[in-house]
Length: 578
Image (cartoon, rainbow, N blue to C red; front, side, top):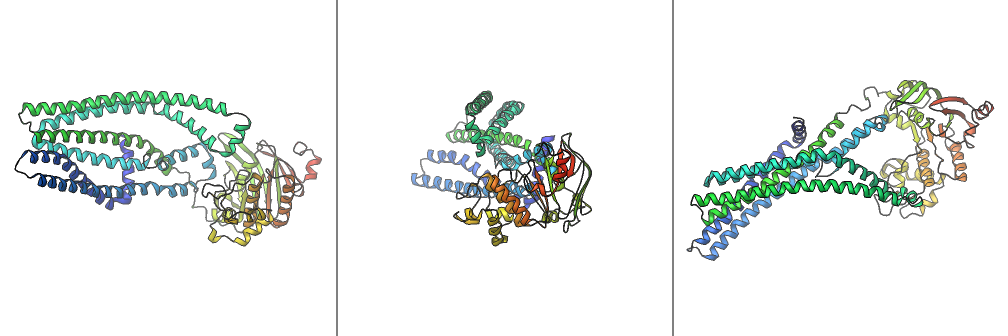
């Protein structure tokens, strides 16, 4: 019942978009299928019949057969053309969900995306649309259409055979039904053991992803971990080979039995024709051709049904994603931020995976403040930033911006007045200019991009590149892309901050990959370029900049002290950090 429900659901969604045009195309394909099937079944018998009759001229016979063959194959060509149109529809149906998925995901809160449940829903749903035509919702549509086509071809052949003799048709149909029952045993084995294969392939995918990450190469080489990787991969390969071997054995048994059933159908038909004394050459050729085509269609029908059943397992994940109530509330997002005045946290707690990440946080950041958040790794600094930026909603307590609940402020308005540089930020494989302006080249201020690149000491390097600021970062989208170092990456990310000139700037470990000279220059840039802005600086080490502002000391998810550098040194709160 659940399978039929998923099948009905995905077909309804597909037909809702393409109903009229799809029905027309399907009708044309079905008609051409039936005409072609009947034609290639009758032509050999017809040719044999006229050849036997001596009064026909050989040239006329050959010409007649050639014309009929061209007509039949012309019908097939027409059918193939319209099949391509239907295939385009099913592709469009799947591919249309790529932007839909992206839009829906970006309507989720970051907290939901980072959660185990959210990641699982996203990963499983993407399998249903990103695996191409052979796997997922597109495959369900394609294979369902094939089921209909093969079924109608089989029915037309049975009717055609029944006009001459009903018994061969009944026997062949019965034997193919038995063949299906045999194959269903193989399908059941596959279903019962699929989780075992999934577990093995998921392990393999981990190793594939690890090896594809270029940054992992240096560690694997330096620490000599290649033999360890090979050992794991060999063990996984043995498990997978064993699984595939068992499955191959099951398939071999199924195929042998099906071939025996096919042979039995042919033998019965010949014996029946002999016993009925109707074994003419044309009749014999007709029944043998019809049985072979029918057996092929039955096999194709069974395979299409099997693939449909397999791909229907993706539909629940697709539905779960589309039905997930993880979207951020939009009804209460009518508040616009305006210029930054104050950001306050009042008794904020944050719980993730049943762990208290932040506990009883009370903090106030005012316009023009330079706030420095320090603490050891794991103290909760990054989680605090996610709450301050509105990416995470507090489990309890309140986070207010300009006196308004942070979660109620319009997202675009918040993005306009706030910018964040996370320690694990990524540069997309777009152009350098697009990575800085965060918009397309048409709407990018080139002069401003060059200016901020000059300020972060990258302009000279970028001007040496073939396409300057239009050079792509990385080589995923362009073979002429440039690979940049960790320090260059952090400077480009800070250039993005300078380009935006937001009221509130949050910098999370922005100097981790910088050398001391570059770090000193970075602090000078903050003081000169963001002097009139509000800056929240997160770090686990103190530098010259952090000694100028108000310092927040964190430990185990709590704020344990707030004050100036000198005040905190006097009471011993910074001894371990400094």
